Amino acid sequence: MNAKGQRENFIDIMAGFTVYTGKYLPDDVHAKLKELREKEDSALATIVYDAMFEDLRLAHELERPLCQDTGVIQYFIQVGTGFPLIDQMEECLVEAVKKATVLGPLRHNAVEVFDEKNTGNNVGKRIPWIDWEIVPDNDEATVYVYMAGGGCSLPGIAKVLMPLEGYEGVVKLVFDQITSYGINACPPLLVGIGIAGSVEVAAKLSKKALLRPIGSKNSNPRGAELEARIEEGLNALKIGPGGLTGENSVMGVHIEEAARHPATIAVGLSTGCWAHRRAVIKFNADMDYEIISHKGVVL
Ligand code: SF4
Image 1 (cartoon, protein in one colour):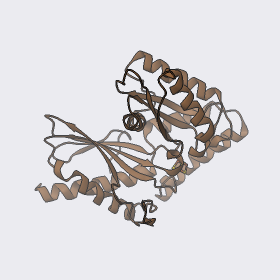
Image 2 (image 1 turned 60 degrees about the horizontal axis):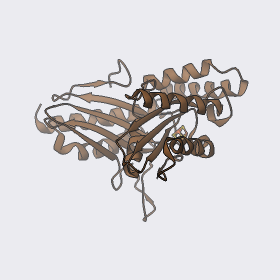
Image 3 (image 1 turned 90 degrees about the vertical axis):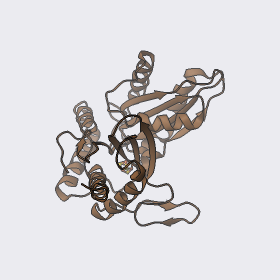
Image 4 (image 1 turned 135 degrees about the vertical axis):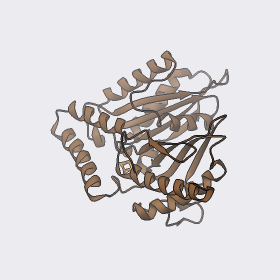
């Protein structure tokens, strides 16, 4: 395939995959929702979970997005320095979003700041947001698609704590924020926490934490323990599906960290909703692809 053919092929696959992300939850989220549904006894909680699964069934049957909120589309990309389309990734992903918007169809969700104008195609200044990681001596590309809905983005916060607040301050910020804003984000939530030395690093890591598979643990045993304890504490609040009370509050708590300044701890918080539309696809240099997040799926 020549370079032009490769480019068009990549755009078509990414447009189709972006549409697919809006219709089908990844395997891990689907399995976690089933697990949480089985733990519920109350009529209200089971009705809400059943409505979620009915929504997923109808999205499949009617070939429609599983939530009306397209979100703002974000791509987190890990690109090998030898991947043939490395120089064209951004323009290809912009074209993919435009195509996906028509194919989906996806609700138009990109509003230009200051002009207060909806662009009508989910593309705008710096949107789709693209987060780059360059992989040396490699010719593959892995693309995470994330649809950042308005509700699930609402609890997001990042802050540098006062020096004596310590890790207790991290926990306090998470609980304050989830108890005051969490129900706006369509629980059960996936909670992403970033801990670092400055606010922008903590915020970015909190979003990257949401890309990890549910059930995965922080690579440091102390980090994994903090994840488990925060998860246990949030579940004890019994926020339940839709915030209408139930046995649990969250699908998981993920923490990602970077070494911090000796005096300060910065903390970032991002949340994913029950409709956590995060999908992963991997390309080789011939544009053959494998979908990692939804096993066995071919577009
Ligand atoms: S929070 Fe999630 S499920 Fe709720 S409206 Fe937004 S995208 Fe949809």
